[in-house]
Image 1: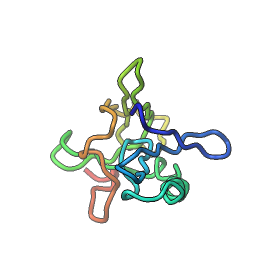
Image 2 (image 1 turned 30 degrees about the horizontal axis):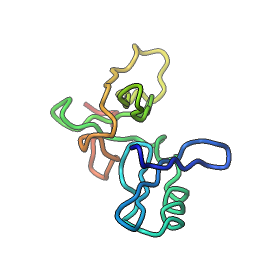
Image 3 (image 1 turned 135 degrees about the horizontal axis):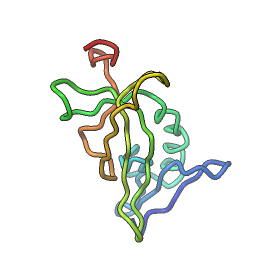
Length: 129
């Protein structure tokens, strides 16, 4: 990550990084996943701007913790730094129910492992067992 350049929104929020790939550049989101091919710098910036951060509020799925994928929400995304390894913390979907016990939390490494993925049609909805 030494040669990755942070890319931020106008308000200073980190959208990701732009990293060199040969003579081109690749956009990388805050989960450490590529969001563009090897492209021109301005195209990589645009890819991060278009990708944004709103997707972090969407439901995601975590595989390997139960017999079916588990619906989860992000609590924390902390990229790696020279001082410490990064981490991603998600919790089992609780639909914001403050009356029930705290939802189970899972700490994952950064960058995000492949078993953490966006929800797709046909995935468990988190409301049925």
